[in-house]
Structures are given as C-alpha cells and as structure tokens.
Image (cartoon, rainbow, N blue to C red; front, top):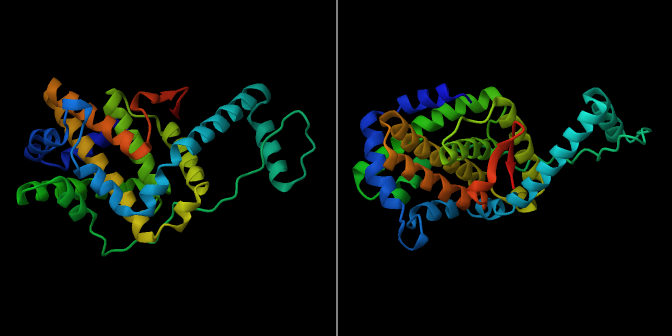
Length: 279
C-alpha cells in the first residue's frame, strides 16, 4: 500500500470530518494525566468480539517465532541461494529430503484459523460509533470514517487475497499504526505481503482462534479496519495542516492501539531489512 493510496482514502473523508474527529473525539479519548492514554471506548469495543480478541493476545509470541523463522530462512538463502533452499523445502514437504547441508523445518499445517464467513447483518460501524462517540453528530462521523475505510480496504483485500481473513485486517492495522506512530513511510508491498503470511501462520498456531465464531472474527477484523481509518484520518489531517499538536495526538493514539491490539511496545515494531519486525 503506497502513501498515495492512503491519501486517496483520506480524500474520501471530508476535511471538516477529519478536523472534527482530530480535535473533538480523538483528544477526548487520549488522557495524558497519570500515564493513561484512553478512556473506556477503545478497550470496550476491542473486547466486544469475545474469543477473537482474547485469542489475539497470544499472537505477539507466535509472531516473534515467525520473525525468527523468517530470519533463519533468509540466512540460508544468503548462504545457499534461493533455488537450493526452495528445493530443500519441497523435499522436506514430501519427506524425501537427502540434503544434509540445508536443514529446513517441515511445512506448517495450514488450518486457516483467520478465515470467516461474512455476515451482512453485522454493523461494526454502529458498534464503533456507540463505543467511541457521545452525540449523534459524533456517531455519524465515526460511521462515515468506518464506511470509507472499509470500502477502501475491501478493494485492497480482494486484490491481495486477504478477503474474509483476520490476518488481512491485522496486517492493514499494523502497517497503518506503525506508520503513524513512527511518522514514516509505509512498509513496502513486499514487507506487507511477508507480514501477512506470517500473521496468517501465527493465527493457525492459536487454537482459540480456530474456535472463535465467524461473527466474532468478522467483527474483530472490521474493528481493526475502523481503528486504522481513525488513525489515518487524524494523521492525514496533521500532515496536511502541518499541525504538531495533532501529529502528537495521532502518535499517542497509534501507540495506545498497538499496545491494545498487538500487546507490544510500539517502539518495538519497525521495518528492518525490508521486513516488519516485532521485537
């Protein structure tokens, strides 16, 4: 996802909406006093999707494991070349490996725990609005931002093969939140695709995610899209107006959401060697 695509998404939301959100809603959510950055809204909506959000708490450890495996594979490629490593992986998958020099793990079992069957009756825009806003005007703004972001995301997900998969929502959220938090360029398409595969594999290692209901997984995925839209709206407004206060607000909100969703220190999520890394 290039920055121009994020700009196009921001353009779907009127400037007045972005300004109102940035100052009237986001600042109300972020509490600097006492070290707390938010009131009940974000954690409330996060926890409303039951087993999906509970299971998500384990992904940080599984993602670190995936990062380690990726690094080890990269080291093998540097030493032996991609063709040799891929040949060793095919042999490991078939159980016919005879190469004693290149040792690769057997392929993981594909369970597709992140996939869900969509339910058209689910109204995540209303869920977000009710949790994050107080007045009818604020609720309408939240819904508008969610609708614009969801439409943008669905097109991207269909093109990338992420459709109806929580791993897609988590990837979109991570790329967005780390970009806003560090105020830097988005991860490359290669980094994002690699991260999606790692997240997809990580979810397969969490049995609780496999038992989560379709509605919980869809709601959780939609919530991540909504969080991303709010971050993009705030961040885009800060960049367009060169407003340091709003930029700081967007950074704090991104950090809080990273801690809430990924259970990670936002300073420990970075791009290294063209890969998204969780430390």
